[in-house]
Image (cartoon, rainbow, N blue to C red; front, side):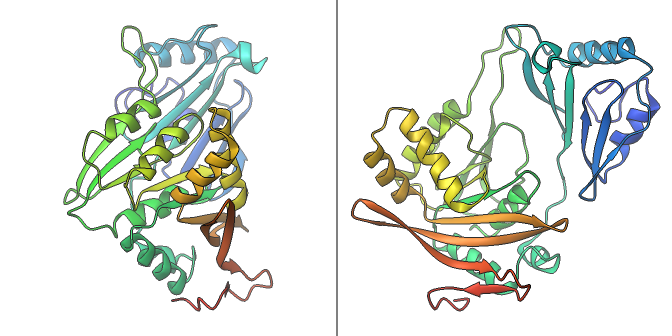
Amino acid sequence: MIRGTENEKISESSALLDLISDREINEIMINSHEQIFYEKGGVISKAPKVFENANDYNRFINQLLSENNIIVNESRPIVEFNIGKELRVSLVKDSISHQETVITIRRRKNFLLSTDRLVKVGLCDKAVMNYLKDAVKQKMNLFISGQTSSGKTTLMNALIREMDASERLVIIEDTPEISISPDHNAVSLISRQQRYESQAVSISDLIKASLRMRPDRIILGEVRREEVVQFIHALNTGHNGSICTGHSQSNQDMFNRLLMLLIESGIPIEAAKFQLGRSVGLMVHLDKAGGKRIIDEIEKVIVKGTTIQFDKIISIDKRGFGYVWHNNQNGH
């Protein structure tokens, strides 16, 4: 069974143990006891037989939940939790999936890539990375967007390493994916769902708490919903140089999602635009092309009166000739 460490009593199924033990496998997707897939090297494949039958799978689920003190019932049919330092588990009860219980196990990458290494593996070229490093040093607020597994957290980790070690960082996540050098004056806060007698602690709660911890920069692992209000408020109160990631199809899609969340919280649209425009300095979008992660575009957000403008800095040349620099930036 999975408990404590990733390979300790992981399961009576040696097939599942093999999948978990393979550190090149980033994600295991259990749709049912018969349908199990895994992602390795950017390719999704169907796994061999893991569970004998549905009863065997249900025993695995019950043991998994019991050993990690997790409650799943009709009032709490969706749960997420960590196992050890590497694995993140998402579980959706069968009453929600309308089939068998769905489990997704994602591996956290423990190794960190430097900005130089990211250039070497092709995330972007040196001029683009230097531009981002300068933006970090100038304490611009960065929003990094992209689809799942596009490299958002990898880029964030690399850019954080470019920050001055004397700056106080408060890192806020729902699962620990951001790693900081011990030389940094940094604290990490992790949200949690309610477990038995323990109180739930949301991302919004942690952002509020971070403001009383004297942060120079706030690092938010991912913005999803109501926490955007607290985060934008934090940015507007002087915490320049903060970084956040989010899922989106483009920079403007990310901006519009943030704007929609502010409006849904009750903020009038013009005020929401103004607050968001003032808070977001630079938007960086990542994409995957042919299994390769790349920085697709970088745009600066500019407020002019009551309008928001996107000043494009770079974009990918779709003909395969590298990056196009806009507005006479020329990599500087």
